[in-house]
Amino acid sequence: MTTYPTEPLPRLAALDGLLAAPAGRVPERLRGLAADLGITGTAADPDAAHDPDAAEPAVPALIAALRTTTGPRGAAVALLLGLLAEAPGERVRAAVHRGFTDYLEVLAERGRDSRAELLALTFLVAHFPQERDAVLAATAGLPLPAGDRARLRRCLDPLDPQDPELTRIWPDPTHWRALPPAEREFDRAWMVQAPAGMMRTAYELDTRSLLAYSGAKALWAAEHGGEEPTGTDPDLRLPAATAGTGPAYAAHLAAMRCPSCEGGLVLDSGAVACTACGTVFPADGGTVDLSLGVGDPHEPMTKNVPLCYSEIRSAFLRWKGTNWGGAVSVQDEDEYLRGAVRPVDGPILDLAAGTGRWTAVLAETHGADRVIALDLSAAMLRQVHAGLPDVATVRGSALNLPFRDASLGAVNIWNALQSLPDQAAAIAEVGRCLRPGGTFTLMTFRPSTDPLYRVFQTAPFGVIPVALSAPEDLRAWLTAAGMTLVSQWTPGSFVFITAVRDQIG
Ligand SMILES: C[S@@+](CC[C@H](N)C(=O)[O-])C[C@H]1O[C@@H](n2cnc3c(N)ncnc32)[C@H](O)[C@@H]1O
Image (cartoon, rainbow, N blue to C red; front, side, top):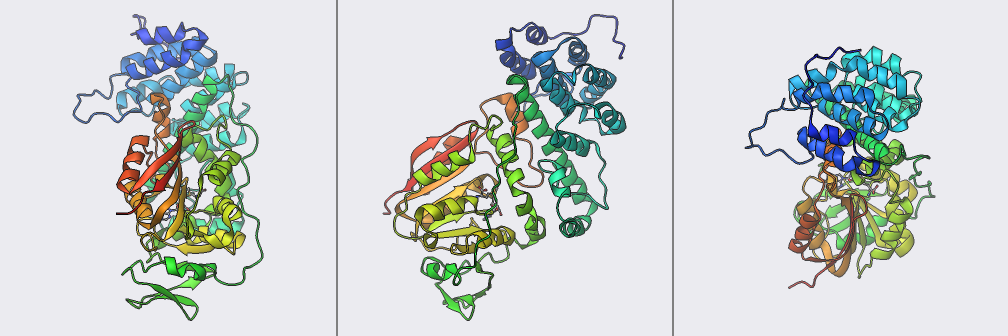
């Protein structure tokens, strides 16, 4: 056990307030204390004078409080220590590390009885890779769910340049390790070729994602009586279908245009050609490739993503959408789309369709022959084509949609805007391609209104960019793109939006 100085510990009034808080006031006092410690989910003002080690004197008091405080307050203190373990100030981090032996003792005392404390303390000790063996030994007999244990272990494991598992760790490494050996070897082959600096950066970003997910989950559990999501993630794979009669994109060529020169497109001996510039676009496996090679460098990285997509997506929604309590189910998503998509004449575009789970909802509701699935990833489109052979599949970029002005009857972007390189530009493209009266449906994420949750929510998602959009920005982008918002639903930190394309001119 740590020996503390004999002089009075520097105490924070807000810490005393948290420790004495009646149960109903713990969340508010926790946030007050977090703010006093400089832990906020708001970008720091770069001009403000800021001492990165300002919280250092409070750390021994937090460690002492952890030893004596149990239940949600104990979990809250462990969470704060975990956040200070990743603070910018080196002295703060060192002060948190000095309590390491205490953390293991508290884990041993309470880890079996209190799920909230177990998760919060696991989040805390995941910050000490230098203590890897001690943490693994101390947690070995504790009732940690398999995914949490695997996440903890990955946070502590050093980078192995021979098997770096880059990006193959979300939401925990177990799913990726269960892939067939040939797919594991495929991934290892591209990962080991990454330059050392890039490997290190990706590894560190992956670690930050896992820590943020663990912290967000622990915060939820601490504030919901130890509750956490139970049950298995829904299976989002499409069943394989029998092949269609021909390339479904052929029926939609009149709505398409050349991504290079904006000329018209025609079928040309098994491929698609531009009638103006003569470019021939490959058409393979039922998909026409109008991407101009934009996504090719990422193709090896995305090839195996569909194999773990159900788990990746559900965990991502819990984290970015604050969906730990399951407020938004797959059925809710389906229902929203069924009710909101109101196409006028012209194809319905599922933009950034991924593996096609929601393309299938559009096809069921409006007919497969009306739907086009577009994505930048060939791997994703192979899944869509295998499950929905009568839906047109187009490889292309959301920032340069290969469709004529006012050619589409409706557009949907589901759980994808946040990862597009330029949200305003993507929405402008939607406005350009939509016919007046056609709907634009969108599901994405906004920054949580809870500044403490935002600290976890805004952490990176490995190497994949994620931008959370404020509803006011979304509304401004819609207006600039010639669309009018007709409804908005914001459960948790989701944003579901339906807009309609205005008349042109
Ligand atoms: C999180 S997935 C969403 C898939 C699906 N809509 C869903 O709800 O599950 C995001 C998709 O966006 C695609 N994507 C990323 N950047 C893109 C771009 N610039 N243009 C088109 N698609 C893109 C990715 O390949 C991926 O399939």
